[in-house]
Length: 232
Ligand SMILES: C[S@@+](CC[C@H](N)C(=O)[O-])C[C@H]1O[C@@H](n2cnc3c(N)ncnc32)[C@H](O)[C@@H]1O
Figure 1: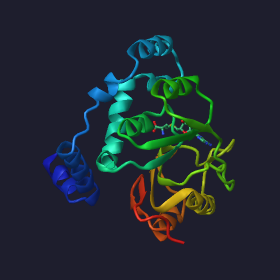
Figure 2: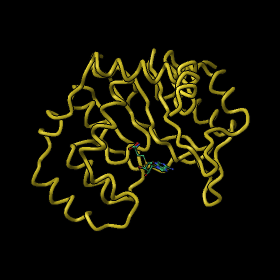
Figure 3: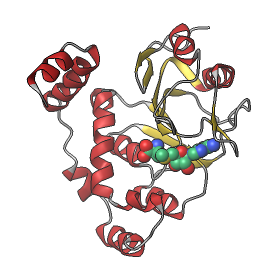
Figure 4: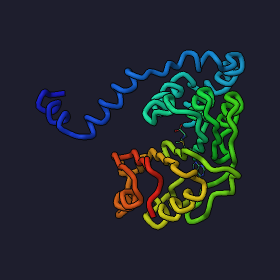
């Protein structure tokens, strides 16, 4: 990278925020080795053997070490390794890596996802993470979950697509969803979304960025954080 480009990148708030997050991860570490060591290695190796030759895009999640590290960073960035025990709901929880780490730290966790990829079911089982099987649909409420959550998270979101058209949700769908999430949030609860870039590389439909701000979020490109609940 050219020096001038490096300097101009330093001036960007996004670059600062990322650097600050990286620095905080070093200051308040969360080693993955003890987490990995607590997993049944024989069972894990057997799962990995079966998915080694798989052509499915989702077979990449059998690389548990890599995904533990990615999710360790997520836990650190939300400061959940420095928090008293919380009730956490993770939407689109996949194989449950994020929740497995939280559970190991003493949090009480619940995942919600489709039952579409057998590998995810096997990993959730391996990690001892409970999942509610549910398809999130535009303009339809989530099921009753019999508890309120201090945190609701969703990473690498792709439930925000209309099928089969694969058109991104707009503000109306998101606002319905946020109102519905409010039902599941404990007083003082927080919400974090990590959006996925879409086919054209964008994250937002028109007006969506403003909607997140209006509802009380801090928005940093794909990172949407409601640190003080939702504002209606
Ligand atoms: C890209 S994966 C991310 C998994 C996990 N959050 C992570 O970051 O490792 C997207 C997840 O969302 C789930 N998903 C997609 N559409 C969904 C829907 N309509 N309702 C619930 N889950 C959905 C998928 O099954 C998958 O587990």
